[in-house]
Length: 494
Image 1 (cartoon, rainbow, N blue to C red):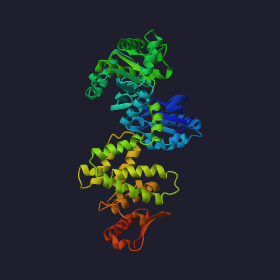
Image 2 (cartoon, rainbow, N blue to C red):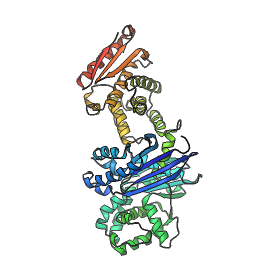
Image 3 (tube, rainbow, N blue to C red):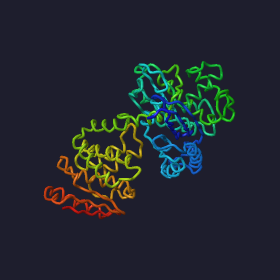
């Protein structure tokens, strides 16, 4: 990456949407611009996990403004990340279709552990490099991430379903603050976070950092009211809760240092934070400068560096964990990418989708760790549910569908097959699995795969079928399998 390159990260949080623009220089990122809008999408999620029209409209309006600011940026310069609200929303696809059009860039809905990884990356990059063992806590609108790390490396990551917006809506309706409400909210938070004590025991870290909105907002209020700056203490939290109870309602809050957009969610955020202090025996927490958006910016740099893309390391980790036959995985990957290059040549998304096809090919036998019978079903389930660092939820699902469709009937993928690029990926993977059935690298250079209109055609050099009669028979079976889809498939096997 060249010095001076502009990079942008968009954080679609449950309470606020944020846009961070930075300039790359010598491995670091210098802030150019920061925009934040309070959209409160999390409060627009009903009991059926459906995002209201008003909440979607607020998000779309914000992203249209961000999109105007990002005109002239390329997709390699931008990463947009959505978190818990859109992880939960059943109608997220409806929101995302228009949101991506307005923004002009793809939006990744990331799993909780990927959100935690990006948060730690952002926090650690803006702290001095040291050998301190850090606990990083990020109380968002609908989820709370906790990370144990050393230097730039996160050692343990978890995401829990509680946050400032969710807890404010549930335990402080209409912004009313009472001692009983705080007690109930804190007990409920401890019940959710109790298992975190086993994952992040206080004996394994020496300092606690708080990232993002809640901890930063509390630190600002405390500093503006005479408490020490740059730290949140247990006594300061107790003082703040007492002040909130005396105010009685969010509309009555007139604290120095409390921004208007924080009033509606301060009760929920503080109750979760105090529960964490009590549960882990924390006496003070240091507000961190970095957050998810900075982590996303540094991840853009890593993806441009050889060996720096965390997704590549995750694929290798999965291969090791599930004892995959790496030689066979590499054969299928090589053949599928070669075939895909023939049908996707000239497509602007070719390179991006070729890489994802390669990852799916390398993991196509992941399900055999459970059982060889219906292994592709087991593999699809694993990829849909595994915590895979670096990957978004849609990326994992696309790979799971490729693994599911590598063999067998195609009607199980009827909806996915409406996507032309997916169909090209799937044809390439199925043919690669078929051609590598003997667990040897086949003579695939003499096989031609073409695509025209809505049809695929596979052809071979003369004499190929005599040398590989089993493969030729399997290709004939494959042609028959595609007859029950919207895609035509023909073969000229000689």
